[in-house]
Image 1 (cartoon, rainbow, N blue to C red):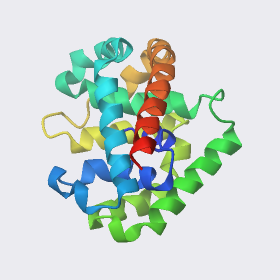
Image 2: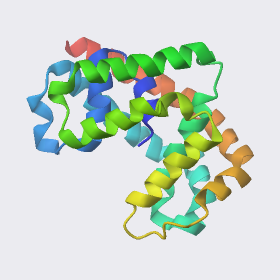
Image 3: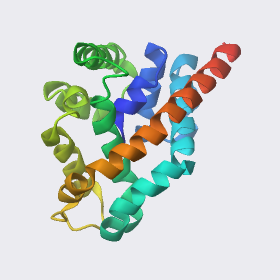
Length: 197
C-alpha cells in the first residue's frame, strides 16, 4: 500500500484512519466504524480504482511487469510514494515532516479502532518514520523489500530496487502525469462525502 499517498489524500482525521484500515479489515466490517472512518475506507477504494485505470500507471507497470508480473501494481504504488515524498510543489520538507507526525498522532489517538497487526506495524512505521523517509532511496528500498517479503510467489532476492533506480526518470514522468489527476479526483470524492454528512 502506498501509505503516504493515502494519508496525503485524506481530508479529515477520520479519513486518515479509514484509509489505513482498508487493507486490514474485512469488507463486511466496514460499517462497524464511525462515519468519518467509513469515509476514509470509501476514499481509499476510490483512489485505488482511479489509480488502476490511469494510463500513466499502466505505463509505470511496464517497468516492473517483466520481472514481477502481476505484482507490478504493488511496486508502482510504492514508487509513487517516493515521488510524492519528493514533490516539493505539494509540501516543503518541513511540511512533509509535520504531515508524517500528524498521521502517527492521529492513528495513535484512534488505537481502539485498529486491529492488533496494524498496531504492531504502526509502532515500526512511527519508530522509523516511514512516511517521511519514503523520500530517501533507502526508505523506498525498504518498502520494496517489504512488498517482496509479503509476495507469496516472488523470489525475495529479485532486483526490483535496481529496476526502480534504473527507471527513475520514466517513473517520475508517470508520477507527473498521474498525481495531479488523482488529487483532483480525491477532492471530488471528498466533496461528495461532505454532502452525505
